[in-house]
Image 1 (cartoon, one colour):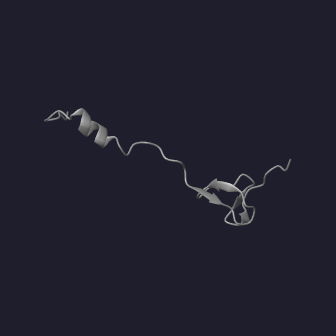
Image 2: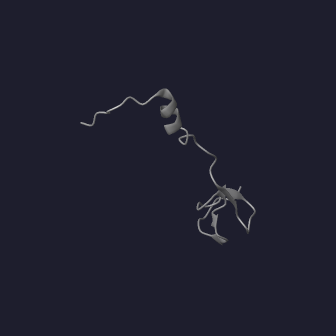
Image 3: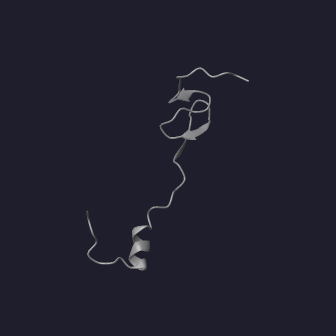
Length: 59
């Protein structure tokens, strides 16, 4: 089992965790419908990169 050799100070621990915070997901706008969706994901209406890829129920 691995055992640390020296204790990490609270300051160094905080520096280590500085990049762990969550950021907002990258969003894209569908060029044909104008909908906002996550990048590399299908838009809510079932369109991906300008093509209808999934059937959705129209309300």
